[in-house]
Length: 380
Ligand code: PMP
Ligand code: GLN
Image (cartoon, rainbow, N blue to C red; front, side, top):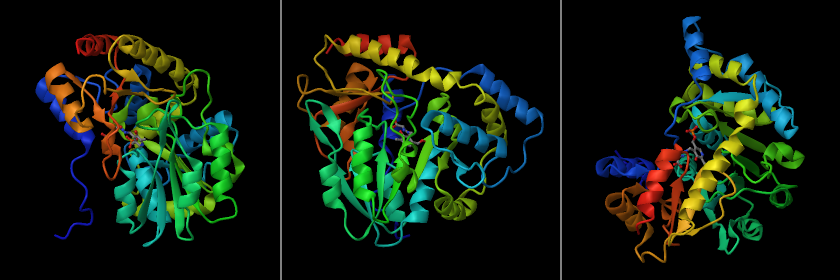
C-alpha cells in the first residue's frame, strides 16, 4: 500500500517508554502521572455505569457535560459558548486536533506550525492535504518564546490555519496577553483560523493566568480551542477531551466528528459532568504541580544540567551541554540505559530534527519517584 504518511514511524513517547521499561529506568519521558486520580471521580464514573449509562450518548456529547464545560470556560475566561452549538466532547485532545484540521484544511492550504511542536499536528495536516509551514520558536536567555514577526512573515494568501499551543509542550512556555494581541494583529482582517491546543490550561505557575484564545474576542471568533480531561484530572488513559468553537466552525467540525468517532464513551461523560460541579480539583492544580516543579528544579539546581524556565505544563527542559556533546536522541537513550532516567529529546518535536542540546523531563510524578530520579541524575 502506498503510504499517506511517509515520514511517520512509532512516536518518540512510545519508544522512550519501551526503553525505560527495558532498562527499569524512572520514566520521566512520556507525559503521564504515576499517581492515581481522585477516587471520587472513579466512583462517579462507576456509578454512571451502574446507573445504566452504557449506550450511545449524543453525537456532540452529553448535554450535562457540554453545559459544565461551557460554565467552566465562562467562569475562567469570560467567554460564553453556547453548550449546544459550540462545544463538542471528543476522544481526547488528539482527536479534537485532528478533526479540526481535517474540517478546516483543504488540499494545498498552508498551516503555520510553531516548532518545537507536539507530534500529532503535522501528520494530521498532511492527511488533510495541507502544507506545513514550520516556524521555529526563538531560544535565548529568557528561554523559548514565539517570534511573532516570523509568524507574520510566514503568512501568505494560502494560509488557512495557525496552530498555537499554550502552555507549550515541550518547552513549558506560556503565552501572555501581549502574545494574544500579536496573534490577533496577524489574523485580524484575514480569514485565517486558529487551532489552540490548551490541554495544559490548568498548569500555569507563579500566579500567571492562562492566555486562552477564548479570552480575546478577535481570537475567540476564529479559534478551535481544545482541552483534555486526561491532563486536568490525571486520567490520560481515559482519552476524553473537548473542543470549543464558534457555531459555524463547530458545524463543520461535527460533520467530520460524526463519521470519525460518532460519539465518545458515555459513562465517563456522565462521571466528569458530575465531577466538574466542584471547581476545586482544577483550581488546585497549579499549586499541586508548581510544588512538583519546584521540588524537581531544586533537586537539579546543584547538578550539571542547566534549567530552562518552566512556566507551565508538567515538563522541565534542561540543557546538558556541560555533561555531554551527544545529539539529543542519543543522550536521552544513554540517560535511560546508563543513568536509569528516561527523558524525551526536544529534537523529536521538529520536522527536520535540530540539535539544541536540550531534553525534556516530565515531573507529573509522585515525590518519591522524583526523588529517585534526582538521586540518579545527581551522579552524572
Ligand atoms: N496536545 C498536547 C500538547 C499534549 O501534550 C497532549 C498529550 N500528550 C495532547 C495534545 C493529547 O491529549 P489527549 O491524550 O487528550 O489526546
Ligand atoms: N502528550 C504526551 C507527551 O508529550 C504523550 C502522549 C503520547 O504518548 N502520545 O509526553
